[in-house]
Length: 481
Image (tube, rainbow, N blue to C red; front, side):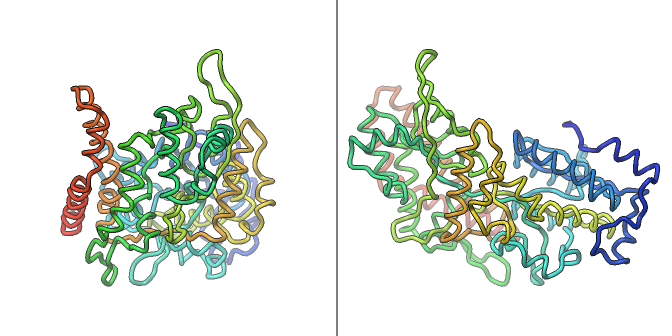
């Protein structure tokens, strides 16, 4: 287990009683301050999925809280980081179900809405309206706060802490060379159709290289549907009543995702930054929070490498579609327990999302602050980016994300009983179809068939219709479970 963030000197100070209960922060009522005692601090557990540099910054923030506000109020935050959000989801689900060997539910945890909603159906989450005033809640960007609100009484079950969005990262150096020798322009990068056309042209121009990769399918399924004016879930009084995914919309999405992958114009893997670094890709769609990993050089071999410029563009939109953006980045929920622990958890959330702390964490790691006042000035926010090996890429990513927010709409998925399972099926369906058919393409090519003949067969209308009907059947079965 990774090192827990409990400051020994702080604990000693608390236990010796050198601070009095009267040193609580101004603004707490007598009833609220009575919940905590600096001489007998409450230790609240926090589980998150930040890693690498983001984890280091988050750990420092937790330590700062423990040494200041936590010390004064009598709160110790004990944070533990999981490697991925999937690992954290599994750990939380096991804890909620009290499975053998699972740890007790943490007081605080990061999660996406569908995962948190699933937990809330098993073991209740605290309604944070009991600890946040209307004025405090109104300070958050509405789309971010909306994700954590559900139920007939619109209970607030999660507070946004740091957001990110998907962007298009480009090796501008090689992109310029490609543009100069073709009829492709930067305008092609703004739409899905234009991106596919550019990739097809690049494939022919480069002698068979893919142009683009996607770090993961993420919310592509939901976003592209929303861009085409489709709401995948039909709702009736808070419950899903049907799956809405017209064939015409599905075909447009198929044409800009499945077809480019099968034809070799796109090649997606877990870390497409590696494709940029090796010169095998020119661009990729990835999280703004991963901007710091954009390579500074293309390394062809041990003797040959050259410096490249990072450029960042908004998330592509369909021709004539609405400019929906991904809303990534987990929120934080509080397990229902007792007033002391819930109040202590809420105090940490208030502190961490206050603009000063929140900007320090978000901007330096490529995330987006969650409060309106912190989002008011792009230039001011960029001043908080730490100078380092790849600070320019982080600045460009943050600038692109914040500027896109001025006209784009953040998409929020709906939550309902069974939404976690439905979401997984929907967002993975086309991605898995690509994986299966690429395997078939390679196998048949190795057996002697020509690549072009197999590709032509795979991209035919009947293959699309077979996948589409399979998706409808799977979704219908999932909703009836």
